[in-house]
Image 1 (cartoon, rainbow, N blue to C red):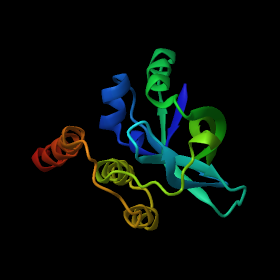
Image 2 (image 1 turned 60 degrees about the vertical axis):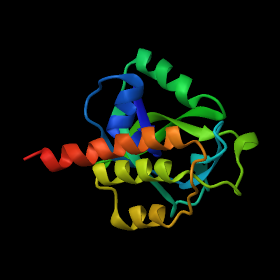
Image 3 (image 1 turned 120 degrees about the vertical axis):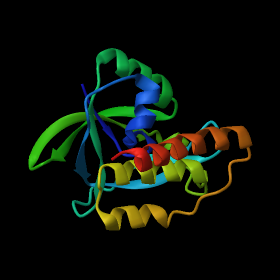
Image 4 (image 1 turned 120 degrees about the horizontal axis):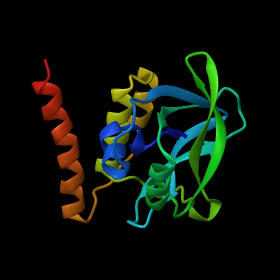
Length: 172
C-alpha cells in the first residue's frame, strides 16, 4: 500500500516508531492542496491537514511510503480520529501514483489553533530529510507555534529530534 505523508509522519523515524520497518520513502507532491496546521487534535493543538483548494497552482509536498496492510491498520489507529482517508494521485519523479492520504474532517478544523513547537519541528525535520523545496520549508518555519503545556510530552518528542541530530552527527 502507498501512503502519502505530509505532516509529522514524513519523518521516517516517527513513522517507523508508529508502524515498524518499511522501505525508504520518496518525495512527492499533490496539486490542488495546501499544507495547513488547523486540524484540532485531542491534545488541544493543531495538526497538519491536506487542505483541498482545487487551485492547480497549490502544491502539497510530502513523502510516499510503501507500508503493509497491517501497518496501515496501525497508522489508522494513530490518525483515524478526526481524519478521513482518501485515495489521491501523487506526482513522484514525473510519474503519477495512487496513495492514501489523511484529510481533516470539517468538524475538526479550527483555524484559531496553533501546533506545538515540537510538532512543527517534526514536520520540518521530515521535510528536510526528504529535501523538500527550500521555499516550502521556509513556509512551514513561518507557522506560529505554541508551547505544549504537557512538559513530559514535549520532552519525549524533543528527545526524538535530539536523537536524530545525534545520529546525523555520528554518521560518516
